[in-house]
Image (cartoon, rainbow, N blue to C red; front, side):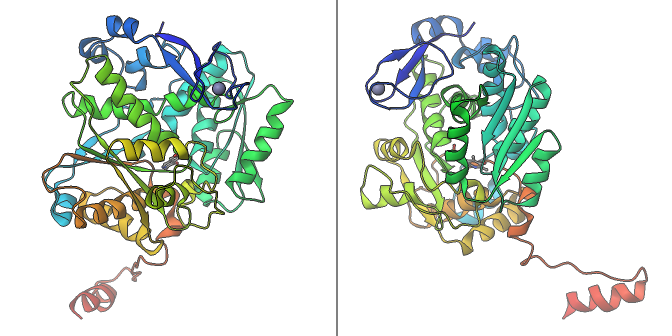
Length: 409
Ligand SMILES: *Cc1c(COP(=O)(O)O)cnc(C)c1O
Ligand SMILES: [Zn+2]
């Protein structure tokens, strides 16, 4: 069994039992899983990790539930790729892409839901649900199917088709006329009198721990060290804070020598409350009404925004607001240089990386990891108008007329 101690309030430090709860009764602060790190130090080492399965479950000593009954469709151990072509383009000699589009439902959300679904079974819920900006719906529905749970996922109605159908194939999808913040509010109300496991509401303390596996893997794949920079796409800020927590835990356990990683926030112009707060020197992001092409990042009222700003400050990181027109550019640049087709959130990350390299925030030789969190096949709408294809008759003449002619001209 892992080394879990309690749920602990991030604000006042009060401890709570390990139940499906998520806010502190005293101060309304968010609850987070606390571990016994002395115990973890004894039963977790580089060797024990390497002996584990090739999934997020190799790190279960620092997850809130053990691997024995894991709801496992293969989340994790995605490739960390040296990005020399993109690096050359940007003047970065030590650039890596962590490609989480390679997860089973093609986004990093498989990591968080694998943990949340496992806890949902342990708590004996019979229904798993979520409020989603898109990718979470597919991950929740797929893990719900594998776990034999009833599934119901809630999405803003204006989402990309592939995200809706990619979830509906596994379970029930409800489209809500409203934005993510409306969906989230509705789900909180629904959760009040239904015994459902909402992965990102009442299961949120467990769910969010799954994101740490991203930084555990990066450290392991770099040969047991933390990089100098990580660029993270931010929606609620959960991924951002947990990537940082994971590195610190590895350092605390002596699995890596230290963690001085600078944490960089990337958000699109049409939904940038966290980046704006950082740039303006404010601790608390001001809620916004999202209007962005990067729908997976469209959370106007980010639950972990305050903590994300704090971490970016404390680590000497930064925040970049990417113009909407540069989101598709970032997608295109990664595709052309590295052969990776990312979704809009990845376009935001690559465009932010380009700015950070230009401005010298990231030096040419500094080891840098850019997080690619989802696949472009789910957000075809974003590039459909800018990509050209040619159609010919099945004759050489037609080929010469339309393709060769065009290529020469
Ligand atoms: C959910 C999501 C994120 C980040 O989400 P947080 O709420 O900040 O944890 C980033 N990229 C993609 C593709 C996502 O689906
Ligand atoms: Zn509290």
